[in-house]
Image 1 (cartoon, rainbow, N blue to C red):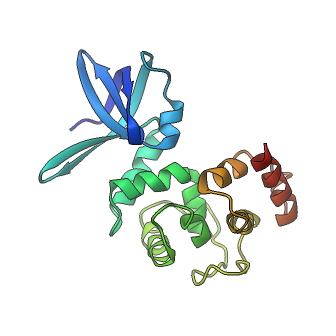
Image 2: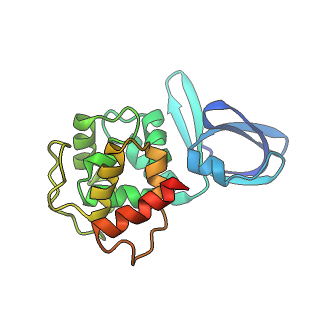
Length: 203
């Protein structure tokens, strides 16, 4: 079983596919959007943590620049109804740290930003993934895992702002970038956080 690859980035392909050449052998792996951005240009040295996926009629490699991201991917595909494609889609929208926060806050709106995840799937994932990912370091909010319309009662400012941005028509990647690296001072309340997020998406 292949656990990691270190070599030269030989090629990039569609759908997050990359080829890493190690000692003259090219290994084809599929990576998340975040991992693809972190990899250097073609010809540069590259390192990936690998999940070697086996099926009866197929083998595939999935690569991650961080071990935490690989471990999160493996937790995701262990959930009922979550295959590699959906797990990659989730990690392309949410980092492992953000995903743990989402689970701790029962933030269905954030999960529904992932293409292919609806309300029922999001509710099931929240329940199941809490047993697979460590959410003990985050205090769960009193947000309901019911409907998605209207404000999320008891939710964190981040969850409320994420919903507001989605209702304004911003896409998952725009929302993720807007909420990345928000200063603690800007994270104090919903209004301040929303203004900071809107400044970022307007750039």
